[in-house]
Image (tube, rainbow, N blue to C red):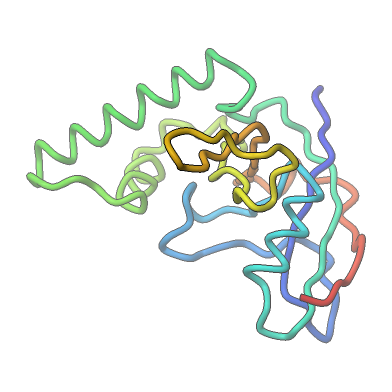
Length: 175
């Protein structure tokens, strides 16, 4: 069993959560899922930049059993499988429609086919941290500053709530 500490960020509301909130947005990278951050720092940054409506955000801490997680970040075999599946489905959709598919169309394809029912979630590398958040000075080359993206921003999309344990409020912060 592989247990990881993970973090869930939401806007501050009147009542605290007892379970994570499912993301159902059409632009969600990994489809309808409970999204968590691998790092508390990234959970905080997400709250500061994306959960601003109420002026405060909440960070919840939890543990996840990652035994059946497709780990595209640290597991090379999982990453190569993931890459192959995405490209295979994209090419199928392009052949059928003549257009590049959206991430929603790819996620819907996987969900509709039900081929990954044993996968309880996907660990995925999100966009890197912003250049001004780096602790390392940019590389200077031909009068340009080129950021050095040394730190991964990692998300975990969980499809099966049964793998979540000890979900609890860690903090409330102002944006």
